[in-house]
Image 1: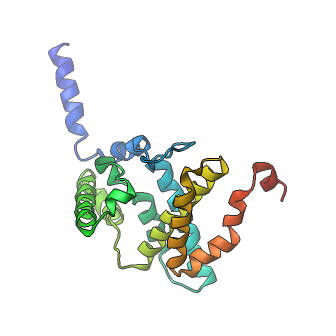
Image 2: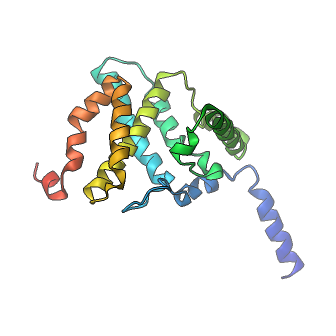
Image 3: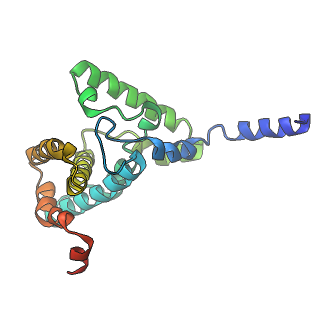
Length: 210
């Protein structure tokens, strides 16, 4: 390798500093969910995030249009879209471990916060103000509550998919997650269960038959 080529490559590497954010996000497709369970189809955190964003959009729309709420739609969807980005650095810690006790749960929350702050540092200054506020959600707001419900709904729908494929590995998870969702006492969630969840048990031919 010539000295000129080495110098060019060094300059190119230096030029990406402060611009690594989206290259890191692209690696979400390599982080697998449900690692302790046998799945008929693997799911990564990139596709999960898209699912949660769609479901969060549904819930915030129901919240506002059906039940007269005033949640910020953009904030809700962006919280959902970015809700797993810390896992690019931490990996997906299985739920039984993550919530084993308060000590582990608290330590993991700090780790997630540090990872999100590091990710924000990969943005150039002109973009930080418009993007970084959505990387770590304000847990006290209505939008965060809707995103957490959407996250659980996505997991529930994954359970339905696995059970439909004959994989009983997800039967207990389905029951547990369903109980957790109903325990939230959220009218948006109950509306989604009543009107949208039944269609997830239909085949493609049955869906197209409507």
